[in-house]
Structure formats: structure tokens, C-alpha cells
Length: 250
Image 1: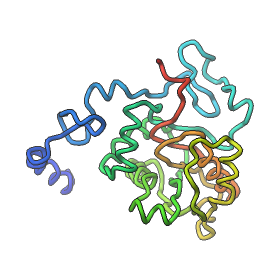
Image 2 (image 1 turned 180 degrees about the vertical axis):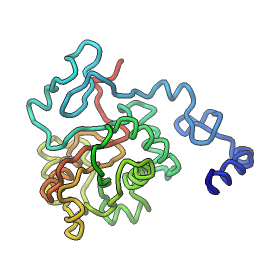
Image 3 (image 1 turned 90 degrees about the horizontal axis):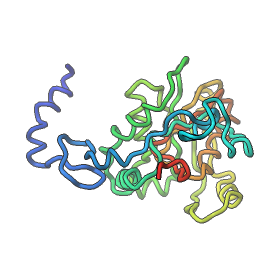
Image 4 (image 1 turned 60 degrees about the horizontal axis):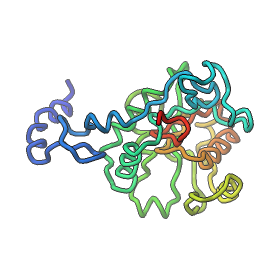
């Protein structure tokens, strides 16, 4: 047992006494720090098979069989090489994301990353982990890049080597909510580029592009294009939560 783990286990009872463990999503008492209560666990929806062979959009029990391509991918073939989403977007996943991103609950990173890691396929080569970048003004204001924190956890779990600054957001962009697909693309045009000093790291590499939430995919598409222009062999998107209302079982 490592020294850090031994110290953590030794001081756990003291920490639990001073700060009783609470569910980070709803605040109810739980058995250990960082865990979810049974109600919130049951609200998480984990994507499963069968799913789209291109983007892993779950088809549901009555949809096409594994290996089929979903209608959105047929209409507009994606530039990425798959999406590994830990959960679908529900009330609980929304609360976790808000606490992590805006509530400064950075201790949630290991929990969220474990759910992402469970959906990542085994690799047959060394992968490079690249977080979706923040513009420097937003990074200064927030104090951290939530995607980079998730990427660090994935690296600790052995899913690749982190390259935290491979991508650069060269200009601040407004919130994309309420904008159509074309407007989102125009807003992000030229906003995300590959850092020239990281070209050798990206060229020919299998990339895991990490973010907390995947909504319309406009930001991730801009990142994928920048990485592919830099010579990346493949780019798989990995996120904690994916917005797919039609795939929810209610």
C-alpha cells in the first residue's frame, strides 16, 4: 500500500467526523466521501448496446441492431472516431456537472472520470489525452479547466498520456445556447487551433478528446477538425454526460 493511500485511509474517520459524507448531487448522507446516494445513482442513465457504430448513440431496446448507423450520422457523417459518454444528460448528471464546473467541486473529478473510463474501449496503442481548451480569460476567471481535470484522472487510470495544451482557444466565444447549427459553427470558426509546438505529439496519434458535457457537438467538432488537420490518426470524444433526450427511457 502506498504512503499516500495509507495516510488517506488513516485520516478518513477524522475527515468523516468533521465533514460527514454527503451525496454531491442532492446533499443526502452517504456511506463514504465522494459517493452518490442510491436515488441519484438510479437517476444516472448509462449508454449501452446496441448503439450507432459511428457515434455510439444508443438505439434502445426496439432500435436497430449493433453495427447500424444512426440517422444523424447518415445525414452528416461525423469527423470524429466515436463518442465515449459516461452518462446521458439527466437531472442528476446536470447537478454533478454544475457542481464540478461552476461550484468548484473539483473533488468530483475522480468519480466523473471513472464513469467515462468505463465507456472507453481498450486501446491497441498508446493514446494522447487532449482536453477541450478554455480561453485564457475564462480560465483566469474559473481558475481551472474542468476538462483538463478529467483528463488527468484518465491518465492516472492508464488511458493515455496527457497533453494539456495541445489545443488553444484563440478568441473568447459567447455561450452557444439558443444558436442554430450554422450559427454555432460560425461562432467557433477559427476559435480553436492546434498549438504549433505540439504538432509532433499529435501527428499520427490516437487522441482522446475530453470534455465534461457534449451538447450539440459544435465545440468538439472544431477541436476534432484542428486535431485532424494536425495529422491525428484518430480522435475519440470522451465526456461525462451527453445530451440525447430521445435516448432517455422516459
